[in-house]
Length: 189
Image (tube, rainbow, N blue to C red):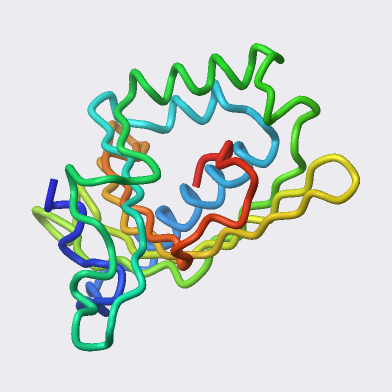
């Protein structure tokens, strides 16, 4: 799905002239999502997702400067995540079951979301039904006494309006590491 990569991990893209009100709505959506994940409110988090969501995290590769376009795998190639709603629901069921080996006891997690920019809004900038948003994230995970992991990267999201609310329709997650330092990737990014 190349549409997730329109604004790619290293592309600065163009900044939309979205209204401050729209920017605040998008920021509130992303911060609410982070709060739900940190509170382990996974069932409520699922309600923020569009039924046809594509949740994708390509692998990062170490490449020469001249080959930066090849830094991340393409859609359809190997990825940390390449999921739709059915798989995300299954992951939530597993986490909620209490028998998830890598999350028993549960990790303490904090999602920090920053550098939120609206790259595109349409079809009408004044009353958009869809927005493309770029952000950066830092996720801190601590489990047991000494297991600590940091996940850092960029995201390109597509949000769709559903009535007066937004839902996450697409997410491309670009981790800034080619080797996963965490023992398991059990959280949602």
